[in-house]
Picture 1 (cartoon, rainbow over the protein chains, first blue to last red):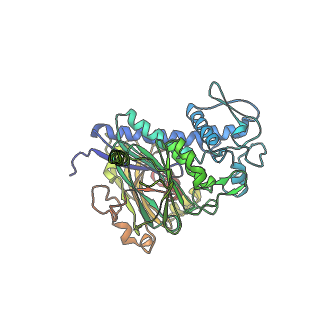
Picture 2: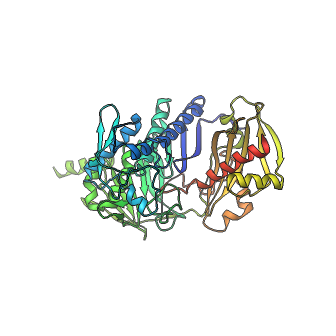
Picture 3: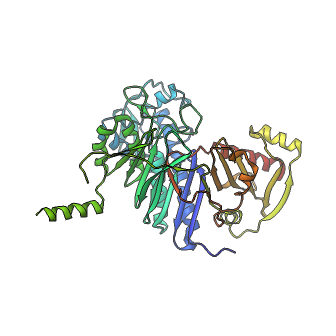
Length: 309
Length: 171
């Protein structure tokens, strides 16, 4: 007979992968709180799926070039955050690359979508008052590069609203940690059977992008390559890119910015969002990007400054 | 700390020939999906004709004839099943309402393997229905993994098969 547990770890198939929710706290609260987290994530999936005809994304792709289309507040929030990252990265983060993904066979062309042959960039998207969105030209958007991170954030917010501060939500490798430290490993980009220790995180999100099992259409659910805007082809980095940020929405999207811009050009963009990155090459070497000053670093810097006086 | 914008360092990788996580026991999944309801275990073996009809409806093969089934008083059902992919074996539970609609899906165990293990019956069986309380995790050190998890496509297909199974053989 097991004694009542004060921690609960569950997983459900959502977002094309496995979403894990771990929570610690008052036993009576855990079940309902984790239910709410899964419910929040499922709602984001339904709103932002490229594939489901009734989703906000599918409606926008069909109609927004003709008229302003009302969307859910969550969809609008993701678009607004995508716009900030698109602007900060000068278009390296681009949610309008669906035509290229269709051409390369990673997404299907939706029914009744107007012709769009190439990515338009965020300039084609107008975010209007009253949660309405209009496309200046026929445009196909795909939120696959940011919605998973937003879904993780939504799950975490649902847990916090239910009074849980000690949690971890992991959606197929994009994760966010609450008030207690959690150790995270990164899957080796060339050898998926190896896990490389990355470090401990508290109150922080971490997302990782890499080719992994992708590389051929339809082989791995929603996963597809990152398209480099302007070049019209997949970004070429072969290793894995892990980005930590205050929220998983930005962590998820910024992995694509690093993949497209490369390490040096991406570093100032990362700093702007309070993010840092780790690149793991296929040969198994780390490259650290835009590292944050740790409290311990600040203390040692202060000690050195004292000693120098 | 030096002012280099980035650092190069070799890594120490941890092998995870059998990365595994157990989430819920069968009993825990039952309490989560059917709180306050008494579920009755029901032995059910599919006939060949039923299996063929399920395959026709679901479009996926029926790997076994034995169903791990519990019934609720109102006609709803709780079914424990397992799917095997190239690198993964996943135990899961499906709650299905009396009208045949999915009530909930919970993963019970998630196991990845990159050797012979995944198709080995004995290796798989050591996990099924054991749940979080049992010390069967092969690699306790890897608790949180960033970077792609395998696709949930096989579970989605398994759920489709069980929905057809409910309509053909349980209802």
